[in-house]
Image 1 (cartoon, rainbow, N blue to C red):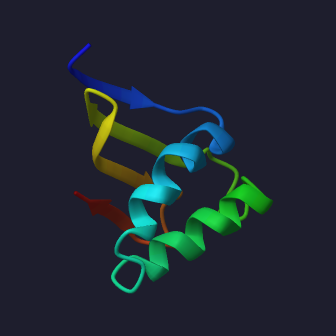
Image 2 (tube, helix red, strand yellow; image 1 turned 30 degrees about the vertical axis):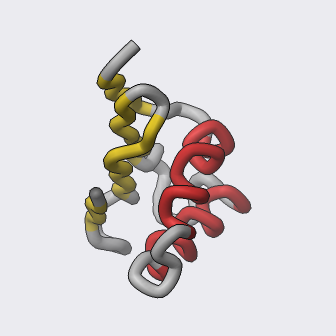
Length: 80
């Protein structure tokens, strides 16, 4: 399989993909890592709606992750 775009419903599945990817450049991604850890502890920490959790991989190599919490309390983030 080549490029795969995936939306996640389970934060643990997204965490398994996103966390190692973000950790490579930890200083640049500290805010995203913090939000991701918060979501792992309590999925509705930022509101009633589910957060958007997305990854794009190429041959199982993560190229991009996207994380969006519900509007108002936190901004949108995209990294890749």
